[in-house]
Length: 175
Image (cartoon, rainbow, N blue to C red; front, side, top):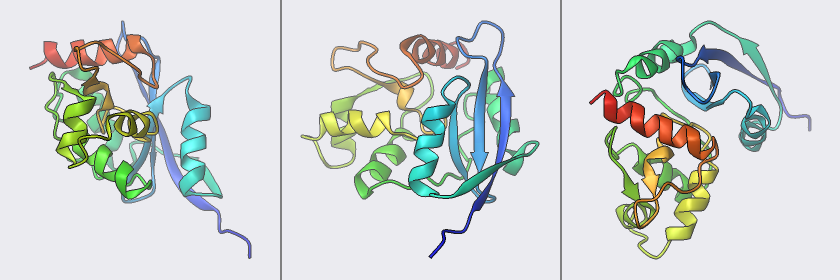
């Protein structure tokens, strides 16, 4: 049986001057934001999308679901503008729990991987939290950049540590 090709809406949001990335790429399934990644990381975005949509096609769209406006507002300094965006991640039950817990970390603050593991009731799953964060399909909106090492150090980020540092500074400056 042939898999139906899913049409997903795609937009690109330019980064502000000085950001270590040129744009954010967003994908909407019509009702939910289902991917947000950094320009230059398209292969990663497509790999994560293919896990949920074995056959899909991206259709260029201007501001689908109002998501681009929310991302632009976030990048302009309204760090809460992305909080209400509806998301659809796919993933295992553990990954979904880990990703949803990210939204409970306030902008401009951080939590450790251990705190995130405890937050979802799995205190021994520190490494699994790191692995889930690495597969987060909706960067920034599900803010895995706010998760740091036990000693407060910036560790691992799919968009690169310079991007993680920029996002955290951006949020702190706009509190």
